[in-house]
Amino acid sequence: IMAHGDQRGLVLPPVVAPVQAIIVPIAAKKEGVLDAAADLKAKLAAAGVRAEMDATDNSPGWKFNEWEMKGVPVRIELGPRDIEGGVCVAARRDSGEKITLPLENLEDSVKELLSAVQQGLFDKAKRNLDEHTYTATTVDEVKVVIENRGGGFVKTMWCGDEECELKMKELAGVSSRCMPFEQEHIGDTCPVCGRAAKKMIIWGVAY
Image (cartoon, rainbow, N blue to C red; front, side, top):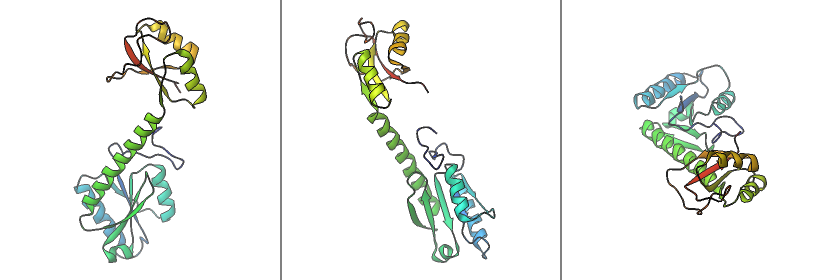
């Protein structure tokens, strides 16, 4: 939620989203629209996509906002003209991009779209993490990063002593976040006590 959410609400990765695709019928009272939307939902469900249909009496705009707020990865719009043309309009929650897709083999197209959303969210979050992770060799450098760069994470070496971990929190306002399996050699000494360092550790402000 913290990594992907935006001003419009949740943005859920498809892998964990309870609803992966929401079908919104357009001009739902016109003959055949709801039936076509229900058939589309059944087709997607049979293909393993967690799909729902919004057949409520709310306006399409209201529905769009509602499902965007809930973070559903893909919205599918289906109206009389779409049905006539053998297409639908799919909207990505992560980017807002709208794509016209053929109804034939739509389940395959939706699965590809969900994969693209999943990868796009991961790449964006990883890029944000990398751009806000810094390296320091002293407590003062850690403080400068936290105070001047709007937070983020700081990598340092660590002697393994809990007293130094607590001292870092006291002096720089950060606590240990994790000790990566993939270790980097930043230096030979602990930034707090100056003794031989055993591990690289990542610090950050706890919210």
